[in-house]
Length: 516
Image 1: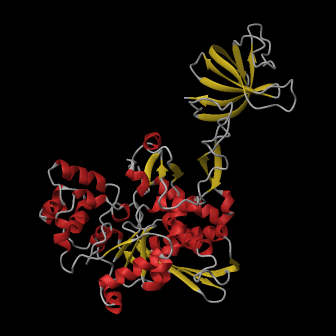
Image 2 (image 1 turned 135 degrees about the vertical axis):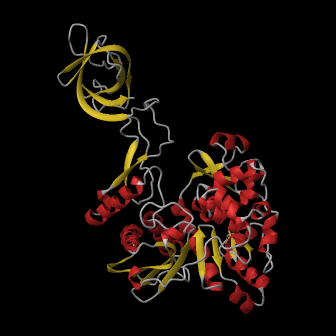
Image 3 (image 1 turned 60 degrees about the vertical axis):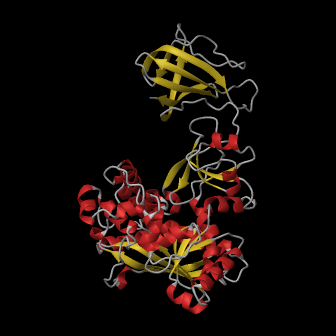
């Protein structure tokens, strides 16, 4: 049985800013609509639209940035509500979870009664949910979108008339390359899952990619990948006793990154990949909080750390004051692999043992794992990554955030920044001292009115003198503590075709950036 909360990123964003489900809101990712509320769709807002186009269709549209951590944190109360009805739940992603319904339906008197109990439990949290039941997970997820119960043994018949695009309807059940496969099948005239299922498995394996084999099984109503029947080695579990106990989100997130790195080192040593993981958190008084996470692709260290953070943040903050709130600080954390597979049995491409291939040669994943290891040795603030921030100069528009933390800029990049440098920004930042000279070799400064004291003709950088071919500016910015002083920027083009951004501050010039 799949439990689907429609438009969850938009619902979570609305909850975070205090809006209701009937308000118009859209979640943006890379400037495009990732999800929107029902009210926004009613006036024409669609996924994939640009921000400006969506706002032109819905002037009162509230926009929010995509935030997986927010989605995971606010989804925890929903998981808690479903767990009170059916103890064994698996979270596919924030907004979608599945439960094993055969025994639970017998206890409640049928699948309809069980579905009603779950919908009522989720509604008590203020969230709307839809439930679907089928023999296989993929079919149940599709059925949940329309609130249907597929009778036993009829998965193939239910899927036969579904569009071929359903193979990519849930990213958590597919790989990025699946979109290319769906596009190819569409151009070949295969428009439904039934038409795809009618193809012989041998023909699919010999004519399409490796992922097509798994997609063909899904279209035919068969399991996409069977669980591993091999016993899971006990040594794979990672347990940590917290000393002192943890009661802060940042401390829990940092510990989660360390445990995720340790877990994946053990998986790599055993040549295994984890596709289902249970995270246990135990308090000082013995209260236990457990969640099982399922993924189509093997979990990476970053994905594992993110799920640990979502779970603990939701428990420590989302259910505060409720029946499921922690009764004391967290004393133990346990990461337990529930399903592991041999990397060679999956229909995906791997780099190393159990790690999905990254773009190019996979160096990005190895570098990221190395950085996480450095964090574990030197501390969470020792490794930082850049994020786009707000500011006037190019250096101010880049902020450093600790690896693994939320990529939240300290200054709003969309705010109005008077005197901000116009685009394009320099490709390379620099802090090299320079001198701007006129035709007589005298230093050129900037007057309080924001003009050059003489026409610049040369720039000296170190011991090298460069002739200018072109210059623009100066453009004063900010406010100086002393009225006679002035700060300004200028752009110059050297004879060797290099373009520089010069900054004048405290009566001295420096090279602030290099254009390419």
